[in-house]
Length: 378
Ligand SMILES: Nc1ncnc2c1ncn2[C@@H]1O[C@H](COP(=O)(O)OP(=O)(O)OP(=O)(O)O)[C@@H](O)[C@H]1O
Image (cartoon, rainbow, N blue to C red; front, side, top):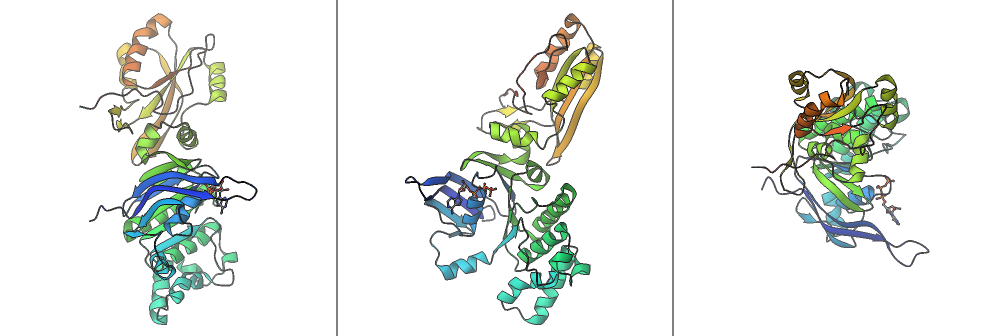
């Protein structure tokens, strides 16, 4: 069946025995997730959260203490070493430090897995040429890793991982050693591999921006547990775990931080209000109702109430094709004149009211969706 998951974790626990400690350390605690074929699935977490342990279970470099990991219909915990080698051939891996052979050229690095697979030389050469073209490195075929930039090295790493036509690509912090521009290029290459070759990608990262740029769904891992999971837009638009909110704050622009508000108060004596922008409703993750869109009718409300306003701060990002962000307005009106407008504004928007310079408010520093009220879906 097409929709059968390609990777399933069922109540996976992983404990490590640590030297000097009698009780085992639980690196993964009751992880259940399923990844569909053709998905780009992000796993995000801080250092030590358990991401690498989780991804190493997909190719059985680690075995669970309990629970099961089923990959392409095969229970990875029950395979013998020979069958494991067979299954691992369908799983490519891309690493943070590229892991290229320094004494081999780009072409020879890409050829390596094909040599292990004993490809005939003429087929091998044609395959390598095609892979070099796919990753845009035809000109660099005969260069050694030391002669390549970080982004080019990672392109070689990706071509090598794709050489044997894997069904799954594991990318463990694949862009963490790269600058933002090169990161974007490498992510677009991964996206193209996903779209054109149909390879399922598991993307391990500590950067929410990486998830935002190409993932379809994301799982947020903290202290060995999945604290939140869902389609990327939904998680960005209505995060409910504090760890997720902290990650999102690093990726979504527009929401002013404490220092920014202080600065704005210096320039603007009137009422300061941020409106969270969420282009569309998102289903609540507990399955009940929805978190409604926000920030869609602000101009119309300002015009209807005739209040005097200035847009003083803001930013917008696109996540899976829909906008997310925040706009901050300064309102130059008396309390009485603002009252009915604010009532209307609150009814259809998530807002954060920072008060005025003379009477500042300390509303909790909400992230997009945090103050979103549910509305029942019909
Ligand atoms: N072989 C091992 N023996 C003992 N403890 C381990 C072992 N492997 C991992 N751990 C511990 O398990 C926890 C999770 O490690 P893991 O490498 O999976 O985290 P991570 O989220 O990938 O972090 P990072 O991004 O720093 O690699 C850490 O506390 C780590 O010290």
